[in-house]
Image (cartoon, rainbow, N blue to C red; front, side):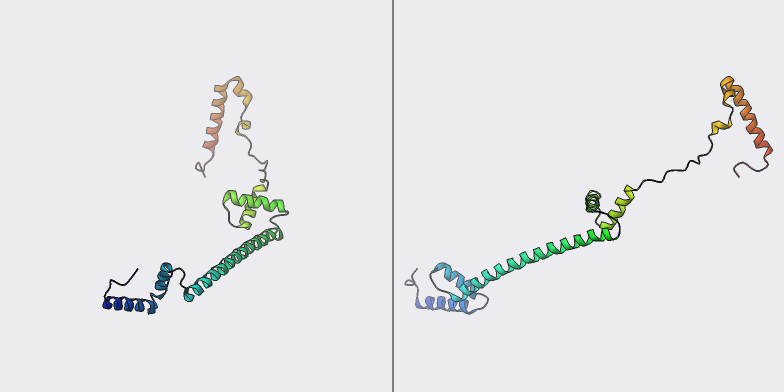
Length: 176
């Protein structure tokens, strides 16, 4: 690329533009990078230093990111250990197997809290309280079943007559 075909005024204009671009802080780096692209052998210490610093800074940022990730994992593990030991201290779980069952229940039922899951787990393992044997006497035991076997219509009439007599002798209204 030669400037032989340009007039001296055009060459001065290009030189002024080049000077303005290289001195303006907003365009200097881009101008130097374009120059380096056209002339790769041209030493530009300003760019080389910046690139070296950026490489080291990105490496340091990666290491810091890895350390932060490890710290978060450690915090999560410590929190999980603390929650598990809390279950044992509060009496929700007796062994590690119980804790594993509680955590399995947490994932199956979508429960986020260890204590809530442990409470649910304990309640599901408790035996239900048996119902009392104090059932009311069956209705059929009040009737003479033998009479129904011999003459069902007659026995039904007798029981109906007894019921009507009981209703008539009782002065209070029905249902009270």
